[in-house]
Length: 130
Image (cartoon, rainbow, N blue to C red; front, side, top):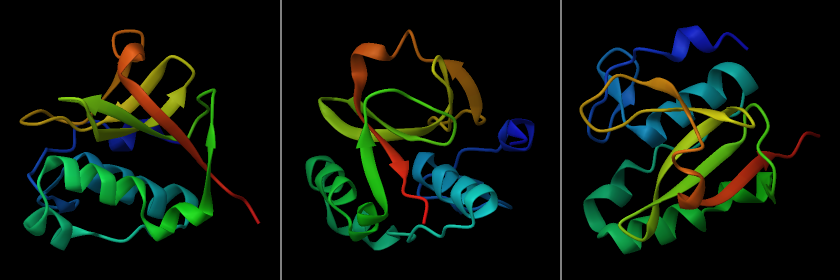
């Protein structure tokens, strides 16, 4: 995987277009389409109709997770849900056991060490390969 092509993408609230910017879910969605050939739904409408607790619950229970299974150890390409304000509303992609790629509010996407976030990891999901 060429991780460098995912670094430096502008953050945009509800962003789903690489040319204008991506939020954390938009970055995960873009990565999965480019690297795995798997298209995650946009789910932009959820943002307009849910509060934070509703949004995190909706995202974690979506139908596309039938294509994923929960794991305990992070590997490259895994989706990592992180707790923010007590809810699993931030996500990124595992680069290796100690690093993840993510897009954070008002920052460019980056790879960051997970040790700082380890106590906030809510769950880790891996794509089922057929």
